[in-house]
Length: 402
Ligand SMILES: Cc1ncc(COP(=O)(O)O)c(C=O)c1O
Image 1 (tube, rainbow, N blue to C red):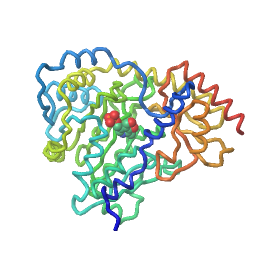
Image 2: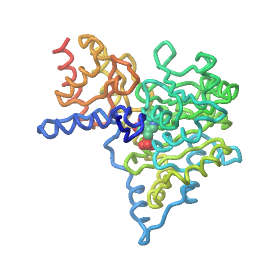
Image 3: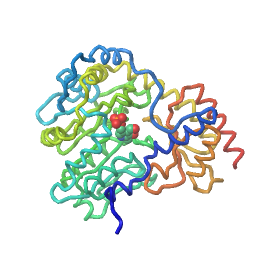
C-alpha cells in the first residue's frame, strides 16, 4: 500500500512558471553568459525614496504582532487612493482591508467563497495568473478556466457559459488590464458583467494588479465620464454589491518585495473575511504599512513609472511587429503577448528554450495557461539599453531560424 505523505492537490501541483524560469536564468548566469530577463514581471526600477525612508524610520525597537485590519494611517492612505484614482468616497457599502501582497489575498479568498450557497466553481481567465487555479483546488472548489481568444475579445463572457456552470459559480475572476496579454475592457463590459453577477448571485473578484500601469498619454486627459476614461476602471466605480477588487503596490509603486496590497469592496463580505483572515497569518508588518501608506497617497511616482513602461513598450514594439510576432501595442500593463515564429510549429516551450540559449528569457504560453501553445510573453523589465540589445538578438535569432 502506498502512503500519501501530502494530499493530491499538493502532489499534483504543476511547477510554478517563475520557478522554472529562475532555474533557466541561474544556469545561464553560472555559465557566465549575458542574460536579458523578460521572464518575470518584476521591474528593475528603484522604489521611490520616500517609501523606503518611511519604512526604515518605522522599524520598531520592540517588535509586536500587526493587526489584520492594518493601522489607521494606512487605511486613510488607501481611501485617499480610491478617491484620487477612482473617485470612490468612503461610504457604508464599501470597505477595505490591507493584504500582504495580493497573491496571498487571491489565494486565500477561495477559502472564504468556495461552497457559498452550495456553489463550487471558480471561473477564471486562461491564460492567466496561476494562483486563481491553485486557490480553487486548495479550497476544495472546481476550477473553471475560460480561454481568452480574439473571438471573445480576450475577455470572459460568463453569460455564454453552460447554464449549469452559471448557476454553480461561487465567484468569477476578472483581470483587466490582463496578464499576460495586456487586454483591456470597456465600461460597457464591466456594466454587463456586474449585471450578470447580480442576476446569478456570483461574487465578482477583480484582479486590479495592473490598473495603474497604462499608456502614460492617458494621464493627459482624465475625465469623470467613465465611458470615456481611457484609464483602466475598477468595477467598484459601477457597483460594490458582490464585488471585491484586489489592488497591489507591486507594479504601481515597485514594491514587489515588500508584499503589500489591499482588498476593497462589498462591506458585508469584507466584514466576514476580516474574521477569517485573522486566522490566516497575513497581517502586514507595521513598518511595511508605514511605507505602503506613503505609496498609496502619492500619484507622482506612479506617473513616472508609467512613462518608463510606455517608453519601453514603444522601443520594443517595432522589432516585434516587423518580425510578425504581434500586431498591436498594448494599451496597458507591461507585457507583450507574441505569436511564436511559424518555423517552431506551435511549440512554444521549444522556442523559449532555444531563445534562452541566446540569453533571452521569456515565458511560454504553455506555462501561463492550461494547455495553450503557440505564444510567448515578454515582461518589459530590462532597461532601455538591454531591451535594444535583446531585440537585435531576437531579430537575428528569428531570421536565422525561419
Ligand atoms: C495578474 C496578477 N495578479 C496578481 C499578482 C500578484 O501581485 P502581488 O502579490 O505582488 O500584489 C500578479 C503578480 O505578478 C499578477 O500578475
